[in-house]
Length: 137
Image 1 (cartoon, rainbow, N blue to C red):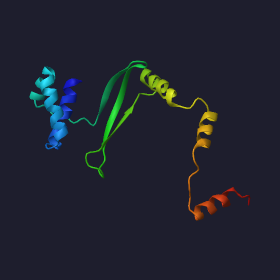
Image 2 (image 1 turned 90 degrees about the horizontal axis):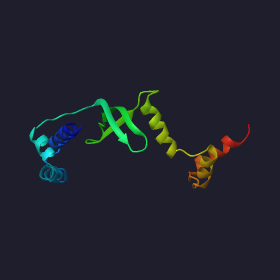
Image 3 (image 1 turned 135 degrees about the horizontal axis):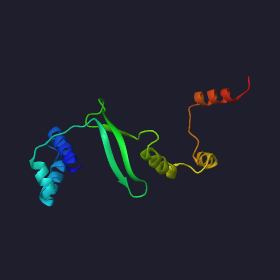
Image 4 (image 1 turned 90 degrees about the vertical axis):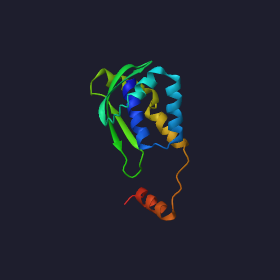
């Protein structure tokens, strides 16, 4: 995992050789970590667009997720990473468990939160359309 991360960092460094913050980070890591310095000296460059990443979450446990990277053509330097678990796998169950922490406890809770939100302000023409949709034919 460390070798892959350093290789990906080297790739990013090649794309942005004048990035001061990135160069400072690399300098700090090189002087502070013998392992990083050795890996960096290897000049390995990797660009992974698909694969499997393994994570360990302190509550959910081990997760094995497939990933894909999507480079956003309209915004150079921006990359979207998607992670998915194999349906029916232990990782999928663990992700569902984690997602349940963020989900409202019931539909009523979600409706209450929506009712507390301020109503969106629309132009008079949109308000007229909304009113027309609500009126019976």
